Image (cartoon, rainbow, N blue to C red):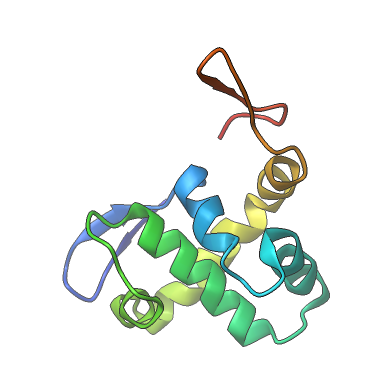
Length: 113
């Protein structure tokens, strides 16, 4: 999925390693943010954390939480949350099955993104 940022830049949203790393910054970690997302606890805060993770992981230079959120047009929030919702099973599966490093290669027991 692609979105246009307020700067006019178009980025392609992807679920990948960097996205999961940013997601893990949530208090309690990635499993907790997924649980809270599903239970709709503090939903706006959680939605913002997912949006931050999605934007910051796909942007070419480092972004703070606030910078990432400021780049997103309000009308794109729903699109991004729908994208996250559609990929939630892959996210959960990957978080539950941490990658294993063998012979200098990363092996995911979950589906590859």
